[in-house]
Image (cartoon, rainbow, N blue to C red; front, side):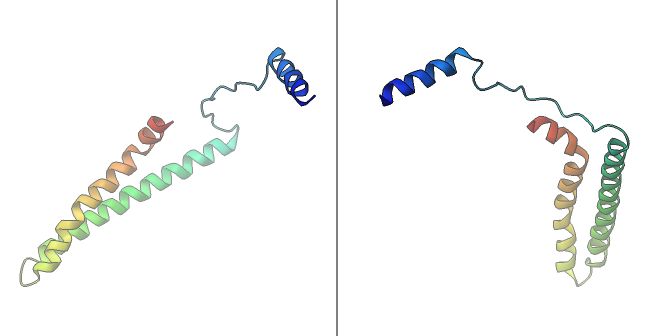
Length: 103
């Protein structure tokens, strides 16, 4: 009895379209002002990140210049900050490409 029920359900599922195969739709910006607000917000975040990166590079340069004399630990800390700042810049500038590649 149980096998007949499973067979009947299986037959019924095979006849119809079954589980729909949804395509992976491309991202679409929302209509009207929401798309403009999202673009503005992302633009502001990118601008803020670039300003922060410039500030970090200047701070690293100051640390290296000041730490040259009798404060070699400060100069080392400034030099060690450079790869992190460059990596952060790469992420800020390449964020849309990275997300597009992952999708």
